[in-house]
Image (cartoon, rainbow, N blue to C red; front, side):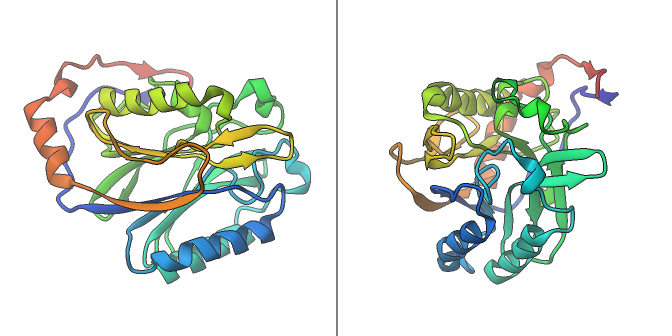
Length: 272
């Protein structure tokens, strides 16, 4: 059981540079995707604090984990450690991973010092039968990094505001995704809604192009501030790597001037 009663937290005191990487993915080809991202990431060395990649960034949104899942200490985790060290920045994205209990869609957050945080996707997208191929994660995972409290999430999680409710325990919500173009309007609205209701920054990173199942992706990766306003928003369908800075002072000032969290309802999630 997870208590979600509202508590007062500590706001960040320093700014955070964040980079969003929106690109096409090579279908079920980890080696090709490692090479793709190495090329895209290299210019970011020393210029950012956090780099966010899409969901299942080594394979695309596959429902064939049997031949693609990596062990928990697998090659992509090693690759992420290497890249984070080269960048001098944390690197995150989700990877098809095998546990003893089965397969999970695991978000990995790796710091430049090699520290690893993980979150297993809680809400599995049943319309693609994800729940028949993967095990659901059991709980949220809060990450503290360079003075910021970060809540990771994966794609379909974005539709469940209770699970993502800010108890004044995070400053930045990350959502990595393979969110099809047919539902791009909900994606954009939900990113803004989660930012407004949780008084936080939200970074959503999606892919572009077409996957091996024929689904099209428009990207629409965005960085949204605590008022729901887009700080970073590129035209649909384009690949890009973009960096912006999250203002700690602006977030703190808004929370102090508009402390809506003080009127939130206390509740518990009993099924975790």
